[in-house]
Amino acid sequence: MGRVPLHPEQNHNDFTLIATAPFGLEGVVRDELLRLGIEDVKAGLGGARFSGTLSDVFRANLHLRCADRVLLVVGQFEAMSFDALFEGVKALDWARYIPRDAAFPVTGNCARSQLMSVRDCQAITKKAIVERLRATYRTQTLPETAETVGVSVSLHENVATLTLDTSGPGLSRRGYRTWVGEAPLRETLAASILTLSPWRPGVALVDPLCGTGTILLEAYGMARNRAPGIARSFACESWRWMPRSAMTDLRAQARAGEREDIPWALLGSDIDAKALELARRHFAQAGCSKEDLACLDRHLQCSDIHDVRLEPQRGVIVTNPPYGERLSDPKGCEDIARQLRRLQDESGMAVCALTAFRGFERAFGRRADKRRRLYNGRLECELMTFYPVQR
Image 1 (spheres, rainbow, N blue to C red):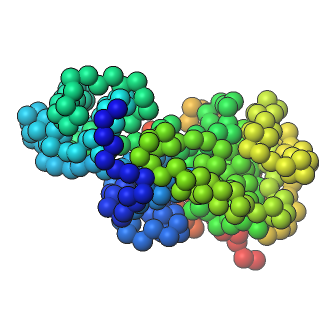
Image 2: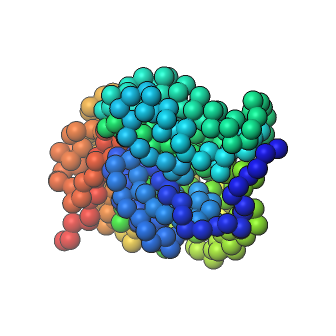
Image 3: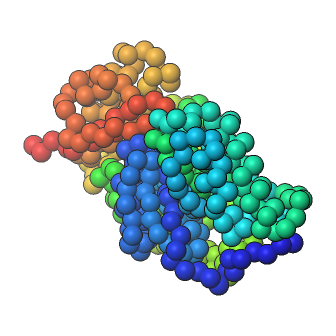
């Protein structure tokens, strides 16, 4: 089988890790890591870099709500030519992470560098790793039949960064959403919107355009203190050098920390009955109790936003209204903004909306108190927060 130099008990603070995040959310992910008790964290372009143990690798995957994935940095060096890339990759200690029989597919990306052919960079990286492993294990055969250790080569401004993907499928894949409706909002973006909004667990949350319920589901998880990755597995769990007992303990601790005594304070509505049926399925797959599902039946309504009425209460309206390809008619976008202003006036609640509609503030009737540029996929949006007007 060949040697696996890194034993699970060698759990030292000598790993550099990156929690990747879309533009505008790097600081949010940094703050998440700090709340997990990880101290050496710096936000930068594309995510937050931190130092941690192998246990921290799993802890971050299990608990991060807003990050896309967690990468383990194997090495970083300048690469102005393909020869420099080959030699730099080959110099790294790949046998520390890749057993003789493990599969190691290579992905890549290039930006603002001399080397801009992603396919060539991937091929050269793969070849260099193969040569290093053959020399280390003293073999000509690398069967790649065991666990998968995904490798990524990223070139940015002529600096090559070699990482291992510890997450596998992106962290937005919580495990509860197996059906999707039209224009689904990614779970990580929904969690980021909630984090940046005035809403906090314990106060009411209303989404009058809830679709398949992603914002409501993420709020439910936050209110219950449920680890977002509790219902799924991660690539690193199959790696034989990861600390299995520690990972098992971290899952058990996460489950033990869930709250069961939080009163139901979520209200959603949508005009699309099929989308609401998907929302109910997602809540059921998320492991909601019978009591919570009964509350959901009462608090998830099929209704046009024009017919929604709210009583004065303490809470926040958080929503991702239709825009762009979802609602090409500007008048429809304006109408939704006016309806959200009406709901704010009725309820006295703050409104937090993610929108790409440039006329949203004008239609809402005033400037947003807070604005933040975010991306929904490749679509540039604004996260706008309107606090209630004091009368």
